[in-house]
Image (cartoon, rainbow, N blue to C red):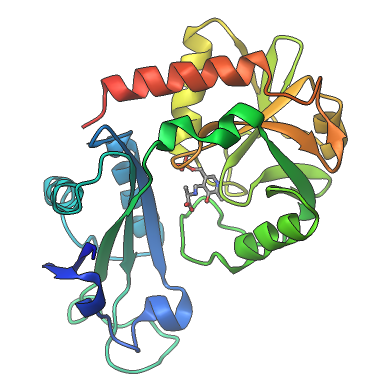
Length: 286
Ligand code: PDD
């Protein structure tokens, strides 16, 4: 049984509880981070914590703990659960003042809820999907307008994954005003010639921590990068495509809405960036 963390305590997962009045439960009033673990170490931890702080501050939510304490909790959970490869999930909600009210509770008297747990994923960096690539479909993006804040409002992304599954695909790319925003739980990229194209940062997409690292590595390797919006038609005509996230790293996309890209196998740019990302990010793992 897993050991999880809730509000200062390490507990067996069956004994960890939060209030039914918690605003995370009633209002999706919470933010989260997912950090991958490879070889027992955290990948891009500083980036994830910086984004967590930003999400909290954008929502006027109190910080539940400092950087060092959060790092200690991550490490203790990795140790207690003997995680070699996997994920650490962290969630902060605005807590509970013991009732339901749209108005935020007084932060002086209501503490945020802090929950962390691990997910063991042996061989996370060596997933079969990375060798074959994944298939995506296009769906309308009907999420709210602050997608740069990593909130737990994940109903539509979950529905998107189900729509993809129903269509015989693995994931969905969301489209707004004719342009791809991002994947349901990842950032989206296409490659045409020697240019990598991915949507520019704004409130329309999550500012992926993996995205930032991958673009930095791509530029360091003299690859051309264009940060701009692209259409699904442009994507279907691309040489290759891929997505990035903390749990998938760099994942090749080989089919979009039934159209195979190139020869229908992972492209050289995606494969190279995956190798570079895994190698470089392991060097700075903590
Ligand atoms: N999802 N865009 C969306 C909508 C996401 O949910 C995620 C991450 C990303 C990639 O961000 P990062 O590289 O920082 O993981 C982009 C996580 C992995 C999840 O919900 O499980």
